Image (cartoon, rainbow, N blue to C red):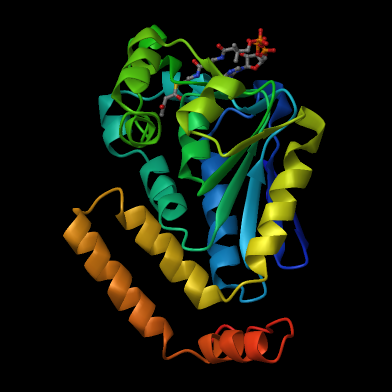
Length: 256
Ligand code: CAA
């Protein structure tokens, strides 16, 4: 049983809620380990099609736990067990949706950016305040943020430490929708349910292809897309999807 998370599964969607209210969900090694473990469990459970990750109304997560970080010197950072947990989160292959209310700061913003889709409450704040502490982002906050919002805004956020509002995050493309705070999780679950009803292999390859678009040149990306598209022609779900269309009924996918 995780101590720092609440986990509920309903109709093919797993909802993971960060639960360290005493520290605004600041990310400890224990929390990251439990999150990585839950994602691994979801990855190997065929009945789960998508995951929603959320925090509280006040904070998605206010960054790495600074009390824990204060006890780590250079050698401690080099051998940081959290690296392996971040790696597991990065490699999660099923659709991951973040429902963000309140503060998403530092590693909290970086965690939200691991999600494939970000839904934010109107009061959410996204920021990389590490510069205020004499450090810099270390879990993707320079790389993913720049890809998400472009150079100028990423530079402004990382170099000044000033957060941006949910509305600004929407305009910049960091989040795909904003909602009243009380509806953020509900909306993320709605999107997750819809996604989870699709063919799992198609979802997996579509996610992989979209993520590759950030890393590859266009020709290589198009080659990957073509291979993935062709591979899906050999799946039972592709036959079922097309047959269901012809028979004017809802497709029932089996993941093969
Ligand atoms: N680590 C540990 N504890 C934290 C925390 C953090 N990152 N953020 C908040 N808390 C704790 C506070 O210490 C406080 O605990 P106590 O009640 O025991 O004093 C509790 O959460 C509530 O916080 P505040 O009283 O500060 O709440 P506030 O509403 O006045 O302010 C805030 C909220 C602006 C988010 C403020 O808490 C804050 O600035 N937090 C730190 C944010 C930050 O710098 N994050 C980046 C961390 S570094 C990082 O993440 C590195 C990386 O990239 C890997």
